[in-house]
Image (cartoon, rainbow, N blue to C red; front, side):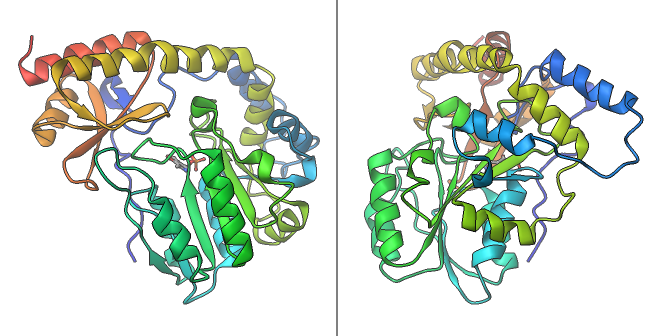
Length: 344
Ligand SMILES: Cc1ncc(COP(=O)(O)O)c(C=O)c1O
């Protein structure tokens, strides 16, 4: 195995517009920043974490019971805890491809054999029939990133239900990665009651602007959460994360305004631009677009020279993932993209 080494170094230099990691492009809410300052000033940094009603706060936001929540150090840890709970050396894990790197990484650490049905066709659609067939062969776990990163596409809740039913019959755990839930509105949360084989991971990195503090949670039936608690360390979620989560969830309108601007104003503008210019992109429901430009390397380099970072992808080859920010960011992106292509 090799470490997962995302291209993080140097991003803080030169005031780049960061469209490469699907983060918020504005600062997190002033209330979150104040709460973090207050925590530092509370003279309690030297004390181990105390979580108080953190589970209640998250459960009330997510619309589930507090005992159906495991708070984690970023949803990467959520994915890892679920893998460690269920998967042993030699087990088969189905992860459609391409998808989010840490899903493969955690499965590999467990020594799993990974089966990768490919996203298909001109829209890179989810390979539903192939996945249903593969579930019949009783793998241990199936990962469904919905909407998927990097393709951006989603699958319907009817299809999720079909998968959950088939998986339950075959005793397969389904990990439903909802990292982009707030942008897409897509969640399998209502299936938690019915399906004890369902584990949902969510993050506060993206839509709550908390990528640096590492905050996420798992939703699953209580008996699963109790098992996960044996794996996650008692202090894995630090007090900066706890403080930020509570403050963020008490300031939802700030984040909802950002999400509305990104999804209802900025994203349609970028799509319209790409359509008008004949740039191929994949239809998606999250805060990013997977684009297939003519000369990806040249484009990425040129955008960087103009102060904008985007993410090269090797699968599918020659694609570039571009996060969507505010309207202002979008205007800057469109201008820079046009200059890079020699259109203006
Ligand atoms: C699909 C998906 N899942 C999980 C994560 C990880 O999120 P976190 O920052 O909470 O670890 C990401 C981040 O890029 C993601 O795209």
